[in-house]
Amino acid sequence: MSATIAEARTDFYWVEDREPHHGRRKAILEKHPEVKTLFGVDPQMKYSVLVLVVIQLVTAFYLPRVLDYPYGWVIFVAVAYLIGATIAHALFLAIHEITHYLAFKKKSHNNILAFIANLPIVLPYAMSFKYYHALHHWEQGKDGADADIALAGKARLFSGLLGKTLWFIHQILFYAGRPMFVKKMPVDKWTVANIVFQVGFMSVFLYYAGWYGLLYLLLTLFFAGGLHPSSGHFISEHYVFHENQETYSYYGPWNKVLYNVGYHNEHHDFPMIPGSRLPELKKMAPEFYDHLHSYNSWTKLIFQFLTRKDINLFSRTKRH
Image 1: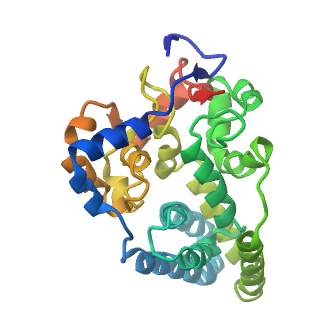
Image 2 (image 1 turned 90 degrees about the horizontal axis):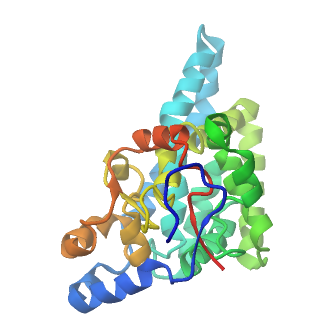
C-alpha cells in the first residue's frame, strides 16, 4: 500500500497482492503442524445456539406484558438493548460459525442448525449469509465479489461525523441489502428451504406473540447492528487503521459471548478451526500474531471510527 493515512480518503486502498491469510496459513502449518489438532467441529455449539434461541423467543413472547405497567416502554427498550441485542449479535455470529461447518460434520446438519439460529432474526438470512461470507473468504477484497465492503457511492455519501454516525446506526440495513448490488446470489434448495422455514415460523410466532413480540425482535436486530458495543466487530475486522495491515483481531471481553469472533486474523488464517479454539491457535503460533496491530476495546474503536477524519468507509482494502 502506497497511500498514507493523513486525511479523509476518497478511494479505497487498491492492491495487487494476494490477501495475507493464505501465505500465513502455509507458514504456520510448516512451522507448527500441531495446529491441525485444532481443526474440526465444536460439539458444544449446538447447545449454546439452542439456549440463545429459546431465551430470545421466550423473552419476545413474555416481555410485552411489561407494557401494561408504568415505565413499561423503558423496560421494554432497555431489555431489547441490553439483553436482546447481545443475544441477536451472538446469533449472527453463531450462524457465522455454522456456515463454516463447525457445529456438525455433515453439511446438512449445519444448515438445519443455521435455520434454527435464524429464527429470532425474523428474515431468512442464514443461507444468503453463507454464500456471501464464503466469497468474503475466497476473494477477500475483490471488487464485484466481496460484499463486506461498502459501495463507493455509500462511502462518498456517508462521510464526516454525521454521515458516519448515520451509517453506523443503520449499518445492519446496509449490511443486509448491499450483497444484492455486488453479486447476484444463485438460488438452491437450501435457500428456498431457509425462506419457507423462516416464513412459516414467523407466521406462527406472530399469531401467538403478537406485533409487540415482533417489535421486540426487530428492535434487538436494529440495536445489534447499530449503536451497540458488539457491533464494533464490523469496524475492527478489516477497516485500515494501520497501513499495510488488512485484517485485525480483538482480544477483549466480548469474545466470551460472541464465539471469539474477535480472533479475526486467526479465523481468516484457519476458518476450519472453531472460535472456541482460536485462542489456542494464537498460543501455539504467537510469533505470527503478537506483532500485528490488535484491539482490546470495541467501544473505543467505534468512537475513533466516528470521530477521526482520516478513517471513513473508504478505509478498506480492495483488489481488481
